[in-house]
Amino acid sequence: EAGVVQSPRYKIIEKKQPVAFWCNPISGHNTLYWYLQNLGQGPELLIRYENEEAVDDSQLPKDRFSAERLKGVDSTLKIQPAELGDSAVYLCASSPAETGELFFGEGSRLTVL
Amino acid sequence: AQTVTQSQPEMSVQEAETVTLSCTYDTSENNYYLFWYKQPPSRQMILVIRQEAYKQQNATENRFSVNFQKAAKSFSLKISDSQLGDTAMYFCAFARTTTSGTYKYIFGTGTRLKVLA
Image (tube, rainbow over all chains, first blue to last red; front, side, top):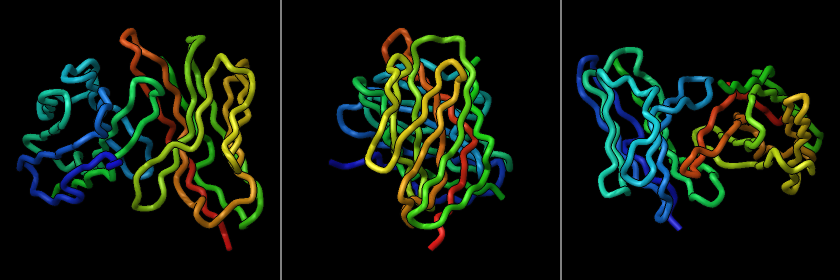
């Protein structure tokens, strides 16, 4: 069974440029999460989807961040424009309804110069 | 609001020895779940062990076991017979179910464990 797939693994951009991250969750997992992980810290929730509905986006900085999950499968997280402080690892995770266990992707490491 | 505290930023243990990682949490909920996740260097995070708050019996998964003290809001992880492959960041996490049945997580800041040969 394929795991959670994220791309790109690494991205380096200049500040004020846009960037997008893509996530393909495990088939059948209706819940999808985007987390921000700073170096040496635990993951912090950005947004949580149940199918295609964003049910918790209270910590998503909506002035520059946006996300979508069309058809309740793949998801894209976008930052426009990026700031220096956005340098971090962006983790995607999916979860089956039965157990709530999180299955993480390898993450997308963003460096903003 | 729930909080999760891991007071040990770094720990080390000799191979084959036993180590305990500490975690405390704060919540007013009565029904919740606790997890330990492991993040090896440059690899994705995976579940180590899970505990339901309504269960008094401590969860065990092979060499990994927990000491769940609900009244004290403590949830420590014991790793027995430590192996080099246990070297990783370990995150304690609290989760509660939402009205729709999905889980909302809060993670601690992590403990970096190094197993020494």
